Amino acid sequence: MSTSISKGLKIRYWIAIGYIIPITLSVISPILVLSNVNNTNKATEEVKRVAYAFKELTGTIEALQGTSRTIRGYLLRGDDVNLKGYQDAKKQANDGFARIKDIIRDEGQLKLLREMESNYAKYTEINDNIVRVIQTQGLEAGVAFWKDAGGNELVTNIFEMLDEFEKREKEIFEEHGKKQEESIANLKAVVLWTSSSIILASLFFGFFIYFNITRRLTDATTQIATSSTEIAATIEQQDRTTSQQAASVNETTTTMDELGASSRQSSEQAE
Image 1: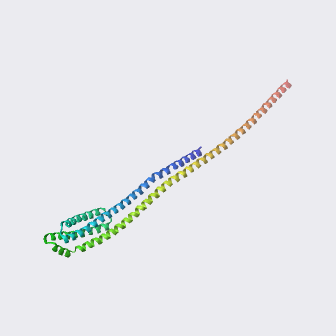
Image 2: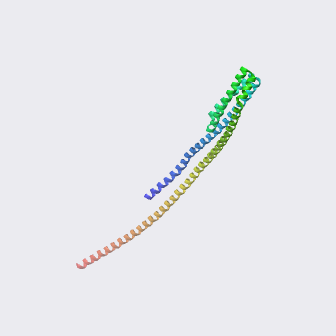
Image 3: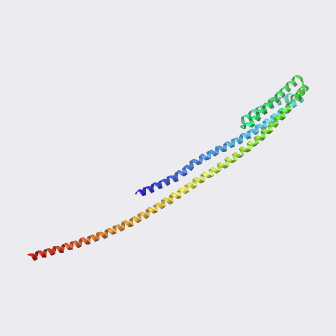
C-alpha cells in the first residue's frame, strides 16, 4: 500500500512539473520580450534623437551661413533687406544652438557646442557693431571696422568646430544604429528561444508523463495478474487441504464405528 501511494505521489509530482515548467517559461517569455522591446525602443529613440540633431544642425549651419552672407550684403549695400535677413539669420542660429543643446547627450559635443555658441556670440557682437557703425558713420567706416574686427577668423573657427561636431554626430548615429540592429536581433532570438523552449518542454514532459504512467499501469497490471494467480493457487491448495481433512474425518468415523462394533461384541461375549 505504501509503495502504491509513493508511486501515486511521484506521478502527481511529474504532472505538476509538466504544467509548472511550460507555465514558468510562458511567464518569463513576455518579460524577456518586453525587456528587449524596451531596449529596441531606446535604441530607436536614440536614432531618432540623433537624426533630429542632424536636422537641427543643418538648419543652424544654414543660419550661420545666412548671418555671414547677409552682413556682407549689408556691408556692400547698406539696405534694409540684408539687415532684416541678418537679424532673422542671427535669431535662427541662436534658436538652433539652444535646440541642439537640449538634444545632445555626449559631453564632448556639449563642450564643443558651448565653444561654438560663445564664438558665435562674439561674431554677432562684431556684426552688431558693424551695423551701428554703418548706420552712424557710413559704409566705408563699416567696411574698415569689419576688416579690423577679425570676424572672419571667428567664422572659420566656428565652421571647423561644426565639422568636428558633425563628424562625432555621425559616429554616434552609427553606434546607435548598430545597437538598434542588435536589439532587434536579440528580440527575434528571445522570441524564437522562448517559443521553442515552451514547445520542447511541453512535448518532453508530455511524453515523459505518458510513458511513465503507461509503464506504471503495466507494472500494476502485471502485479495484479501475478497476485490473482497466487490467490488462485492458494485457494486450490486450500481445497486440496479441505478434501484431505474430510477424508481423514471419514476414516476417523469409520474407525470409531469399528471400535463401537468391537465393544458391543466384547460386551456380548462377556455376558
